[in-house]
Length: 464
Image 1: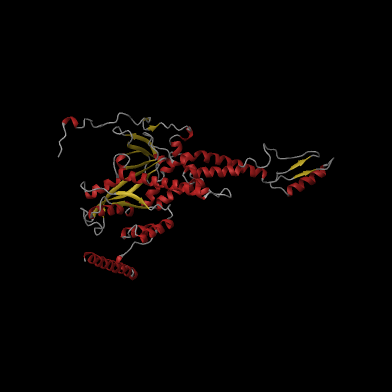
Image 2 (image 1 turned 135 degrees about the vertical axis):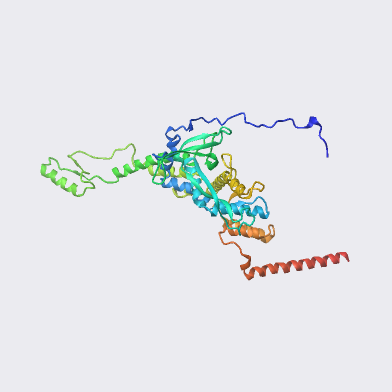
């Protein structure tokens, strides 16, 4: 072993504390929102217990709601699981135990729906509770507690509009120390302000900038086209109401007498769209609709569709609108946009799994469950989201088949299990395997034996 001289040893010192800060202005638990639109600051966006926020108003629009489902739908349909820390029997069991706790013992789909509300509000909060419960010992024979384990009893959603104050951590200003929740009261709970500590909260903040724990929601950048769309829809409705229903008009003869007017009124009232929706014009008068342009040059409908397209582009799903508003659409453009859309989905999945694995405020929900059940000496598995249903597996699987035929990859049980998962077909059970499969395996075994025999003969001939 080579000994280093003392003068060659590193002299750098550890950096125990940062010199900079988060920079966000938080006073008495209220975040100073610097959004250029003051009508969307803080709870004006995500609401209060007494008033719905702008974000929730937007989600009531059909196009806005569907655009977000382009993201939330594939994420909810993904295969969520845990990757073990190693291939050891214990690590495999710990990963299986985490899947039992997070995906079987509770309603994970409902929890995921609540998590994904950060797309609307900018953040979402879940309060985790856990308690001792009976567990299937046959599944987890290495569990120290036998048939007793600590499992999650709930991932309770704490709506964004109930957050009254944020409590910033003094040790790390980028984290929270807790929140104060405003509960207005109901038949099942008392009203008041309740503090929830950060070590009970799983916080998902989208696009957190500094210590702005409210983040910036994906929906926020769709506010402009949504606002324009609402105004245009009102104008279009007024236009249809005023010009879509014709106004019956009659021209009276010159020097008309009262009887002529009475007859005209009778005629017009019988053909009315509304009892008073008619005009009687004296001789020589003309009535026309006057506007700033002739015809429909303002193209209100096209402008509304453009706003809908911008709403889809906001979530990266603009390719969904290609061909819907015109006679032409670009397949190459759609393919290019879809690739970016899939990358965005994978980023959202990674954001969720990273928060569950590492936490946002100094603790990990996954590690907590593992430590309380298997102790501090074991490794912690990682939550993952597999098989997002956005890729066209009908094109990918034939490539895998060709690679297997040419010998570039070797089929094995893991590859078969993966193929079954993406095709959403049942897992393989060896005890019920069909005879044709065993015949193929026997044929491969015989082929290997013949190959080995031929190689042996060639070796003997070479020696002779």
